[in-house]
Amino acid sequence: MDLYSKIIERPKMTVDNTPEKVQEVTLEGEKTNNRNYFCRVTIRRRPTDLQYLGELYLEEDTSNSQGTSAAAAADTSDSSKAGKACQFFLGSKLGAQK
Image (tube, one colour):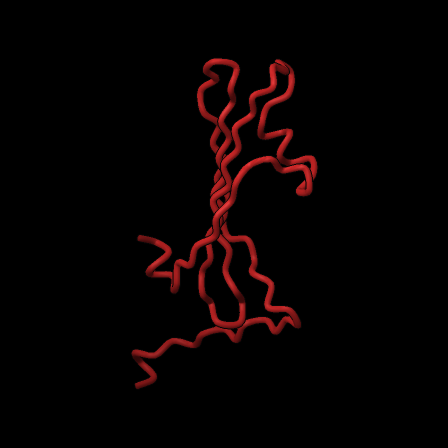
């Protein structure tokens, strides 16, 4: 039995079960008709049960500012987000990789 088994690390105990960020991908679309499209996908993992959660954030910037990108504007403050976000459950690592 010991030959085929593997030791799994005990997860770090946290008081609030806050998910840890595993990966984040940011995409910025083509600028058309004075509109900038910005999309961010974030994958997080809960340390206590090793379940994966995802978030998709989409923003459409219609301002005519040339020097500021939508990505830089979104990173300045979470309270000033004008986009839409949805959260989804991915399950185990196998489900998250699909």
